[in-house]
Length: 171
Image (tube, rainbow, N blue to C red; front, top):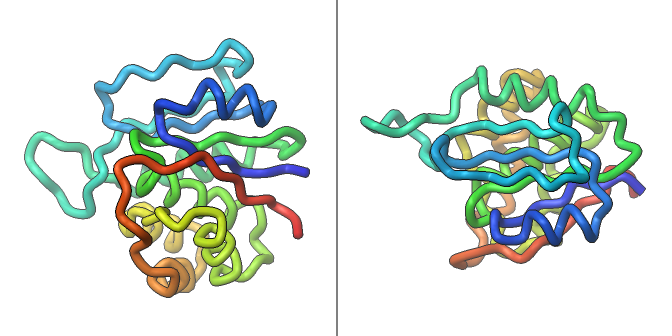
């Protein structure tokens, strides 16, 4: 069954290996080294160099519409035959937002609240970056429903690092 896996940077090799993923999305600070596992083809690894912020801050890279557009285009090229792994540094904010955007992209007919709830059920620590979600909502034409869905699941529990988790594309 196709799934979107989420993990922190420290768990990328283990999560890719355990899931048999064919695609990897790194949503992390631009200068953070990320080693692509050898089982992931170069063209199947998307690196989005952004900081985990929601407003412009000097010296940092704010998540922008172009970043999220690149993510959506990457997800649309994914055939869904094998899992996709999405990570950021802690696996809590940027990666969970990117995973939510990926789920909404891959399953456009699915209700945003249901997808957000599945994310929350899979991870009590998930706190999707609201700016990434807002850009995804706009680009996918979800008319504010993605933003409302993430607001409905709330902030999540505080943690230094998330545990790897997965959300299936199908029921």
